[in-house]
Image (cartoon, rainbow over all chains, first blue to last red; front, side, top):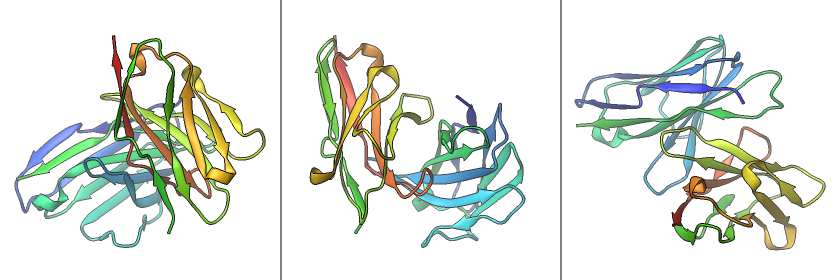
Length: 116
Length: 112
């Protein structure tokens, strides 16, 4: 299958700072990428869907000014958590889909954010 | 409301024993049904999916799942588990590949 990689795997930051998480498709062109948030012992929650070259579509209840998503190329999407606060601490996961894979989603390893 | 329930937070099974992970869902119509596995340090990987047709679906790594419409269930099974199957397993349902509602996951622990 295709490979999706996230960076960093974990990050610790101070409250009020911004953090950027990258999601890369390593061996295919990702026309669509998805960002999720996962709380401990809870299910994945879809945050937003991004298509290359377009603005991201955010799910209800997700603050677009807090979670900035950029999908500037067919192999890279970024999630920036702006002015992070402790309640933003979570596990963030991305997935990607591309042509030729029958709609299958390929997931990154996830990025754990801890805001102090 | 649409939801996915995985009743078991964690399950412990001896190596070589059979496995069944439960998944129940609440959805307006028959959705697409998925099982994913997440091994430590790795991304979620699709094990199998059901869209239509034969209700017994074969997946990778020797897993299978059976869709039972009357019970709104899509349980995952494996006849004989290996230590490498230790991971977290997620059931998901939705109207397509992308708009998924996820269960909270079941952590599988393998006893030697």
